Length: 373
Image (cartoon, rainbow, N blue to C red; front, side, top):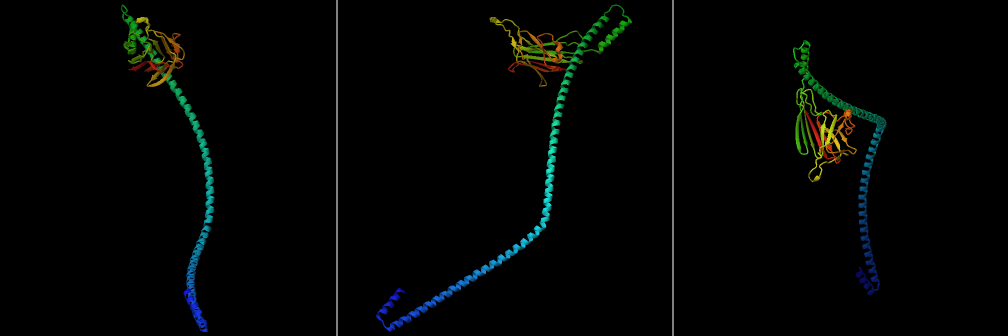
């Protein structure tokens, strides 16, 4: 464009005449017309494009409006349906709320009733526990009384057996006297002999015992009271019964203190210091006095401890000395001031064992009784 202007300017400079001005005007008019046409064409094209774009956007907006209208219509329809359902649900909701309130009141009443029942149950449990404790105490008391009665029964049976033995001895002696009487017997003497014979035959009695002792590593055996009507008497703690019975006693010790004897009826048990007091070589005495303070005697039957006695005070037991420990129920049998009366009623009759332990709970001696028929 600049080049053409320069050429035109050069033409103007060469020819300053009218002709050149006419030519210039004609050319300029022609150029302006062409520019105007071009401008109009472009404006028309731009207008057509804008109209086309506007129509497209209007169609899209119209479609969106139609879609929104349809959605709004659907929303209105759904809203109307929901309002209708809300109207139907309203009475049902009120009914459910009333029923819910009623159920809540029932729950509160049931909780209150359950609390009352729980308190009543707790009171009943406390009463039952007290009743059970009372019954257990009563049962223990009855068991203790039954044990005492059993011990007393066994003691009485032993006494009866001893008296029967004495009666048998007296009957035998009287029978011998009657049979050995000189001369002819009178009718009364014959009747007396028959009575003695019947009494002797009806009250025949026999019992035996075996006594085994183990002390300081040595064993001893002794048999006594194995007759059927003689006048032999052995240890006072032998158990007897109406039928033939056997008492086996096994003693052992680990030191100077040992069990001397024990009564099967549970009345007493004895211990002794079994050292001899003999002087050994080197003028050293084997005597040993033992202080029994803190020592215990434990009575066991069937593996269960029935009673325990503890020496709480100083008690010196010298060589060869013996002491007896009587149960409370046999306190009247105490024979010496050195004997001890325990605070329980009985040592418990029957078989079982006695265990002697020192103050460190070490076993020092034991005595085991086994009663067989």
